[in-house]
Image 1 (cartoon, rainbow, N blue to C red):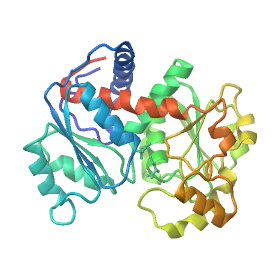
Image 2 (image 1 turned 120 degrees about the vertical axis):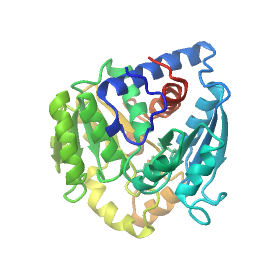
Image 3 (image 1 turned 90 degrees about the vertical axis):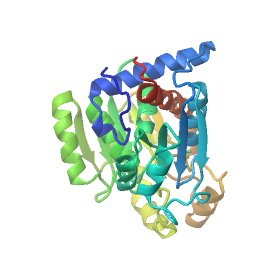
Length: 333
Ligand code: CP
Ligand code: NVA
């Protein structure tokens, strides 16, 4: 892989398949080191700022633990506890933080915000989720797939549900880059936008990936080796969209019956958090209001033998560590 030293990490569109492969190999080797208890302080003494304008469990913990394992210090700026956006612009924040930190992670709303931050910052910026993209999540998902299937190229990957938002977009980009057969299975109007599809089609033509957009769940999952879904209402969306989403996306819920129509070796994947039961405040409220037991995935599938969701969650840390080790520490796979 080329050195990724001092690159920004905003979307996988900016990285070649070789660079993504290098990051996955580096993540696998750092995971081994962590499990073996071998020190890997590749960014000793560096400082990381974490800006979270939306809430998080996995991404925040992954960045914090990875940074500490690499020998770095971390400062967390929560959705309400800083001047960002209220009293200070993104451009000014970028220049202030660049004077104190070696890198900045940003989670928030539009992709243009993280791009603005990167434009004005003089240190690398990492995208920890925007409305459009969630690139560190895709690295974790692909590391998980590699651990299970040995390789990514040619895998039949199906994304079920609302494919217009960060997860549908980023998985399509990742699959196109790494040569998977990607299917978005959604109702009409819920597919990724035409400009991104056309960009991904050009990438797919070079990598051997295929892209398919299908409204019929039974047809979509035939031969599928990975079935992926995400919540139906994302962070930052108004409460009022729940009703239309449930109506449109109910036929796309991942159930045991649907999994049975996929390949025998198929795995179930989800970026989490998931509404698979009524054990959360929002899950309970919405399930009771709309007369359901679960939303995008049934509890049986979530808890079942094909589910690899917690392996994905752990891999968030190893892959984010690889991104920082390569960009800040110059590590190669
Ligand atoms: N998958 C993911 O990004 O989880 P968090 O929202 O908990 O960070
Ligand atoms: N689409 C979800 C992903 C969470 C990791 C959201 O943006 O809330």
